[in-house]
Length: 275
Ligand SMILES: NC(=O)c1ccc[n+]([C@@H]2O[C@H](COP(=O)([O-])OP(=O)(O)OC[C@H]3O[C@@H](n4cnc5c(N)ncnc54)[C@H](OP(=O)(O)O)[C@@H]3O)[C@@H](O)[C@H]2O)c1
Image 1 (cartoon, rainbow, N blue to C red):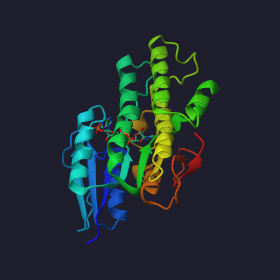
Image 2 (cartoon, helix red, strand yellow):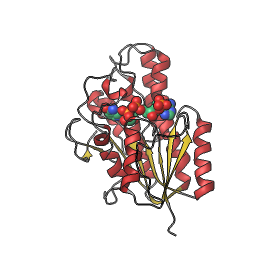
Image 3 (cartoon, helix red, strand yellow):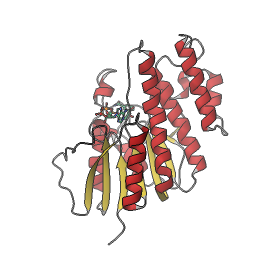
Image 4 (tube, rainbow, N blue to C red):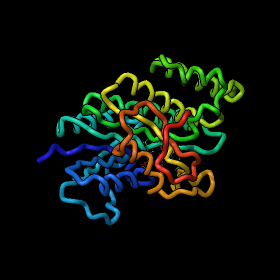
């Protein structure tokens, strides 16, 4: 029997993550072992899908703010399968209101940037040749929301994780002093967290040329997260399209790029965009 593909989807219990894992099951004939990770690690709704016999879905516990849970999952996948082919970092959070607390700001950076990066770094040692990592980002991470001086730092071709940490440290200090916006940062921490995720994606791709590592905006999608900003035009199935393309579609050898549609309402499957 062929070696099964091993795939991980984070935040797979609801929203876009739920649609991503359903689409993976529908579009990959197997053999496939799919870890559907969620904070509770509880059993997952199979959405009435008939699961092909060569597909195995395993619920898994993962909290992006608990490094031990990240290490435990990568160790378990490494021990049981000696490799991973597809990692889709979909889990994320968005405090949409302007006046969030310092703790909510920190949580936003910890989940959307730090926790997602920790998952990437925990899985890198077991990613198979030509394996794919997809980081679900957002159009909110686009650098047009940042001062040109900050844009240049995020886009530096030599950017390191230490530089990125320094940038985020600077942002947090200014936000504590309520001077971040006046200093050229966007007003919502979500925007900074997703720009950092895009920058981290570029660094990871540069450092791991044997993998395809990309990030994307799924568009404006009808989930509790998306509905904070109004009436989202896209379904979760439509929101899953770009992440799915980056995970299993034909993207040649492209790595380190940000993919999105022309507008957040478009239901296309994305193209490379500046961010
Ligand atoms: N919806 C949109 O319009 C939109 C637009 C642009 C980008 N995105 C991005 O798309 C991704 C999915 O968003 P969604 O709209 O599907 O949101 P959602 O319905 O709110 O689902 C978010 C998922 O992330 C998980 N999550 C949150 N915090 C976590 C943590 N600390 N550890 C582990 N899992 C955590 C949630 O788990 P629980 O169920 O345990 O809370 C849930 O599974 C996010 O990265 C988001 O930023 C969404």
